[in-house]
Amino acid sequence: MSQFALKIETSPTTKAAIAPALKVFYPPSPESKLELTPELMAEMEEASFRLETASPQEILRWATERFAPRFTMATAFGPEGMVLIHMLAEIAPATPIFNLETGYQFKETLEVRERVRERYGIEVELRQPETTVTEYEAQHGGPVYKTNPNQCCADRKLAVLTKAVVGMHAWASAIRRDQTPDRAVAPIVGWDKKFSLVKVSPLANWTKKEVWKLIAEHDIPYNPLHDQGYPSIGCWPCTRAVLFGEDERTGRWSGTAKTECGLHSLDTTPVDARS
Ligand code: SF4
Image 1 (cartoon, rainbow, N blue to C red):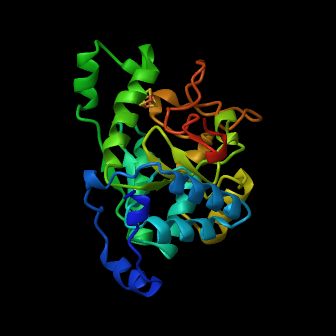
Image 2 (image 1 turned 135 degrees about the vertical axis):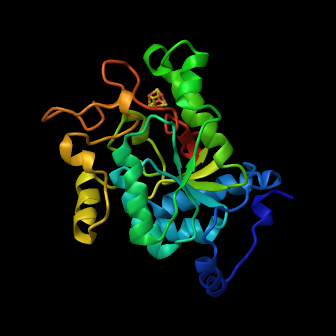
């Protein structure tokens, strides 16, 4: 029997009743790994098509009703992530949310985590690599982000994410299609082959303007570095402020051909486009 067929039906009433109590990170359960079955592919294709014109809230509602408590979200506390956290706080506050704490994040970024706790009562879990920055750099004879940023991202982000999603069946992504060529082809619901998860992108059709409009309307916390010329913020060694008129992601891995850490690079394809 496929994992898809093992879906546990829970009434909306029951879910609403238990959700507030589920404040801890859902315990990983490796045996519950989701398998890509023809039924799941068909479901994703149908959902992605149907949700193409839905609001981000409607997409999140579908995702949490379908996959919780095995639905999770990773955030770097960017504006899009903050918008999703704000929506999840209303729709499904028990959703486990985590941050990949590489050891190279700005202190301002980590302070946003505190503001999320104060505003929403949501504890964003920090997931860290096995080595500290000092240990990692000692092992490699210096900062790996200078010599091999792809390796650094693989070690300090992708490997950590792979462990963090054990037992999960789906995750929310805060990507927008207009951010990068890779992201332009992201479906609303697709199969993330890199992590064997259903990937849901509620903001795929949103623009930067829509994101900031919601932030302003609801006084959603955001990283103060955005007001200092940093539209897109990752680790401090690989992020710079951008000049007026530059693309919002120009400041990431500036001066290199690298544009993604690997979390969202062509890892999700529309189910009807896969070979
Ligand atoms: Fe390393 Fe830079 Fe990737 Fe952060 S963004 S993990 S510092 S290469």
